[in-house]
Length: 509
Image (cartoon, rainbow, N blue to C red):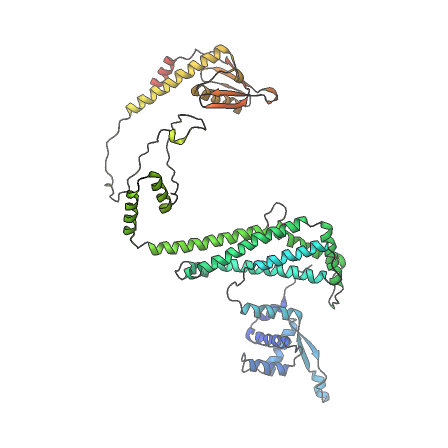
C-alpha cells in the first residue's frame, strides 16, 4: 500500500532556489541514462552541461555542490571510484561516480513528456475496441487456460489496448471541448474541417456501438471460474519473472489482478446501479457531434442573414398559384418548409365531450386575441376607459344558478333512493356522471371514505369486496371501474336547499 504521508523529496529540485542548475544537471543525467551511460563523474557532468548550452559558465565547484545536494534529495546515488587513484592524496579525497535513482528517472521522464505536450492530443480508434473484443473471444475459447507463458502476454496486451483506448479517446474529447476549439467553431474556417471531423466521429461512434455490445455480451457470458483460472495463471507467470526488488506475496498479487479485472469489466458493464463508463462516453461523443453540427448551422445561417430571398419567394408563390389540387399544394409546402415548429397557445377548453374517440377537428375553435407585431408603440401612460363587466357578471350568475339547480335536483333524486350502486345505474348523461366522479374522488381522498356537503348531506362510499368491477355507460362512452356503493343521508339538521336560497346567497355576495 502506498504511503501517502511521505513527502516526495525527489521532486524538490524542480522548485528549489537554483532550479536552473539542478534541472540542467538532471536533464544531462537523463539523456545519458537513455544512452545506457549510468555512472558519471563530476568532470563529465560539467563538460556535458556546458556543451548542451544550458549553463556556459558552470564550474566544477558548483557542480560538486549540486551533486551533493541532489544526493541528499535522493535523486542521485554516489559510488566510490577507485580506478582513477594514483596517489594517497587522491585516495583520501575519494572520487565518486553518480547514478540516477529510479524515482529520478521517472520524474525526469514525466517532465520531458510534459515539455512536448501540445494541447490534449489523443485519437478515436475503433480498432482498439475490435482488438479488445478479439482478446476476450480468445479468453472465452481457451476457457481461461492458455499454454505455458501465453497468459501473461495476453493479459498485458489486453490492459495496454484498453488503457490506450480510454486515455486517447478521453484526451481527444477533452480537446474538442477546450476553449481553443470553441473559438475555432465560431469562425467560418471551421466549415473546412466540419465534414471530415463529423465523419471521423461518426465512424468511431458506429464502431463503439458495434464492438461495445460485443464486449458486454462476452463479459456477461463469461463464467467466474474461467476468469479466476485466467487470473491465477497470470499471477503464476508474473511471479516466475525474476525481480530484484521487494516482491509482493501471492495473495497480494491475486488481489491486485482481481481488482484490475473488476475495473476493466466495470468500465463496460457498470458497477451496481451505476451507468457504465462506455455509455457515458458514447453520450459525450454524441453531444460533441451535435455541437459541431449546431456550430456549422449557426455559421451558415449567419452567412445567409444578409442575402435577399425575394426572387426565390416570388417563384415559390407563382408555383403555389399554378397548382390546381390542394394535395399537391400540401406536398409542395412540405418540401419547401418542412414541419412547422409547434406553438402552444393558452386557452380555456370548452369541454364539449370527454370521449377519446372524438376528433380534434370536430371540436369548436378556441378564440384567442393575439398581440400586435407592429413596431409602432402606443403612447406611454395613455388612459383608457373603464370597461363595464355587469353583463358578464350577470351571465356568470345565471350559469352558476343553473348548475346549482341541476346539482340540487340530482341530490334530491339520490337522497330519495338512499343508496346508489354503480352496476345498477342506467345510461348516464355527461353532467350526472361528472358529478358522481366528483363525489367519488372526494370520498376516496377522505380517510373515513365519507364527505359532508355544504347542504348537510352525508355521502358514504363502500369499496366492493374482492375488487369487483363493473361497466358504467355514459354519453361519452363506457368506463370500467370498481363497483362502488354510495349511501346518501342527512348528516346534520339543515333546511332542504332550494334555488331561492342559493339566489339569496349570491345576491348577498
